[in-house]
Length: 441
Image (cartoon, rainbow, N blue to C red; front, side, top):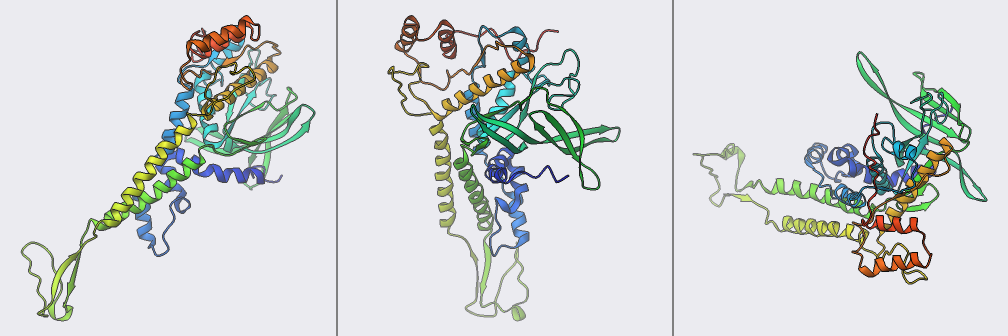
């Protein structure tokens, strides 16, 4: 068959936007591997000199620092479960991906990828005798749904239809890594998983170069259980990195710092110069202790040529200005504008809605959509809900804020469950569920 690993054109465009942020998350090693893409060679620069300069260039990773800071703010408090969440669902969430990770840890990885790329995905799988979307894990009477994180760059193709109820996925292709172990060690390979609403298949490349289907089965769910978390949506299954401007600032810092370090290295070594020197008459120049330099020219002289340091000082100031701009960049994600509703206040009492708070809303919606997929696989009608605590994101709530909530409850605008959820989001009520605890044996 044709090469299934080739991304669709629309995803190729997005990959170009994700290349820099993902490389920055990979640190100095990833930036060096990118070579000329992120550290161009100067027009008159010798290749050997460039290689040496690139080898010595180290990334100050402000981008990754900011990502970790923002993710840390979202997950400063653990995710909270509603009181009506079924015990079976709560148990699943304590080992949500069948690798021992609880929901808090899993959701943090999911959100981090979405913050870097603008979106990220989770596939809710349920292996039953090798069916579902193709995994063989747990194919017995104890089979249960579990979540598989699909990084943004791993979804290489998607087809959908527009129906009366919205967008409906018809087919996706996901690039996966697979490892084979033997007595001689392990070898990694790439495979492509193709999922439609009623079928799944796994494709690998044979030695002859042809792609072959090595496993397949029926998708008994009848739909593609893919959940997408957006942090900067531009369309259905389309997004751009919300921190893209920061990535470019960090790249500029990386490049200028490379030039500055190279200039400092050159300027640190004064160059010996001579006037009136005739190599045929005066012989070779020897520099060192107990050496005397002479010339046959009575006006000849030796002297050192040194940089005045003006260029180095200007470069240093430019780096400092860049660092200030970078450090201020993340503040726009932590502060926002006043948002009012017809009641004069939002029901969730957000006096200042920052972009980061908006992203936490997207995360909460995605997590609850994932719960819905878990329920679909198990035939459960009630799932409860998950709440993302915004206590570390929002301004301190005054007594009036709490009185407003109670007034809304008294007027039956919100019910008891809604009141408890809002109080829990403010840290006033605590959830009894620890998503990172393993279920008892």
